[in-house]
Structure formats: structure tokens, C-alpha cells
Amino acid sequence: MPLLLDKRHLPKLASFATANVLVAFDFDGTLAPIVQRPARARMRAPTRRLLDAVARRYPCIVISGRVLSDIAERVEGIPLWHVAGNHGMEPWEQTEAIAREVHQWVWLLRKRFALYRGILIEDKTYSVTVHYRRARAPRHARAAINAALRDLPGALVMQGDHAVNALPQGAPHKGEALERLTRLLGCDAAIYVGDDGTDEPAFGATHPERLLSIRIGHGQRTRARYHLEHQRDIDKLLEVLSMIRPVRKDRPRLTGRQGRASRRRQGFGQPRQSAEDPLTDRVRTRSVRRSA
Ligand SMILES: [Mg+2]
Image (cartoon, rainbow, N blue to C red; front, top):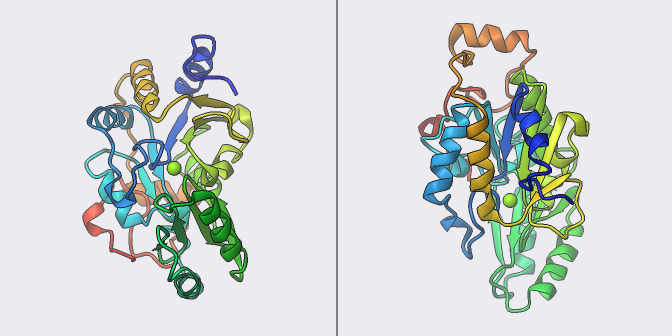
């Protein structure tokens, strides 16, 4: 898998960056370093500053496995065009039926791992993540978690970094969210950066000619076409992206009457369960209700 920031491949990056492109990022392990306690994950100050610069130049989004209210707080103040949570289920596809199903999974998992130290079960209302970073025997923990998740009725299991995720089968994943937002924001192509198995659907979301897929790290089996060697290299990528394009002055309106008309023209429907306006100029973190 080629290293994107190698000078031989920079023209590829430039060809995408000068197109009508959506720039999309995962959060944990991509914009922010992986930490022992997921609640403490933060972008480093240079990453935040560079992401701000990129978001002023490109349609820029974040698609995270975190609950929407959680990820929105972590990127507050950056002029992103959209933030999607729960692997793309929020804000469009969260339903009471999914919440009931996941509630049952969480109950079963807590019972199963009640005596297992170092395993953290994160209830995200519409999906569940089981973390094992603090387990004494991570391989054994991973195997036990995968066995438990395979027993859950109707669960799609996705591997993360020292975490395993269970999503409802048939629910949207990051690939669908990326494809949907590329279309809704009127872009012809996308750049997507992620770091683990939950990003694989996004790496294969569309034809490689319309998607520059970049995975952090190397050596994994992946659908991504390029990689960055380390998480900290995200800063170099953001810097190159911001150097290639001047600040946009023709940012389209996505809110208000004009914005609603624009979204209707793009075939955008109402979210099923959310009172939120799913496309906003900026992330409205204060209006996002906690769902967990
Ligand atoms: Mg990640």
C-alpha cells in the first residue's frame, strides 16, 4: 500500500484536492491519537488548527463511531459541514427499534462479562462497542468478545483498535454515510481518512476514481489505496490540503429557506427520528441532545 505523502504520490492527492471534493475523517486514531480511556481522546492543538484551516477551504466532515453528541463536542468550534455519529446512523437512522435491540445486547454483554476485568462495554444507544485495551490478555479478551458478539441476534460485528463493535445488521455504516454526504453536499469525489476495520466500508464506498481512501498505519488487510505511516502524519496531510486550496468564498447556504430549497433540489429527505437539522453550516453542538 503506497505512502500517500511520498512525493511520487502527491500529484494524486493534488488531483483530488483540486476537484469538487468532500474531505472526510474518522476521529479516534485518525484526527486524535488512541488513548487508554476513550473519554480522554482529544485532537492535538496543531491538528485542531490545521483541521480548522482545511474546513475553511473544503466541504469537510467527520464520521465517527462515537455517539453524535460526544463527537460533536470534540470538534466544537471547527467549521465542519457535517458530523455523523454511531458509524453514520446518527442523525438519520436512529430508531426506537434499533435502540431496543441494542439495549438487549448491552444487557446480555454486561451479564456475560460481569467478572471479566479490563473489558469496558460502551452503550451507544444505537450500537455497542466493547473495549479491551485495558485487559491483561488482549488476545484472549478479543476472542471472548468476538464469540459473545457473534451470539447476539441481528448483530453486524466490526473490528476496531482494541475494541469490537456491534451494529444492527442492515443499519447504515460509514461507507453509506460517506456516499450519502458526498451526494448531498454536491461533491463529485471524496477523500476519506480512517484507521481501523470500521472504516473499511468507507474505503470501498465508491469507485477508486472518485475516492481517495487513506488508512493510518500499514500492514493491515485493507481496501484503502494509500496509507499514512503514523497518526501524527495527519498533520502533514492537513497542511498539504490547506496549502493546495485558498479559502473558499463561495460557500453554499445549507440552512434557512434557501438552504432547505437547495437540499430539496439535492433530494434530501427528513431524518426519521431526529429533530435536528442534519445539514448545518456549523456543528450545532449545544442543540444536539445526549442520546446515551
Ligand atoms: Mg478510528
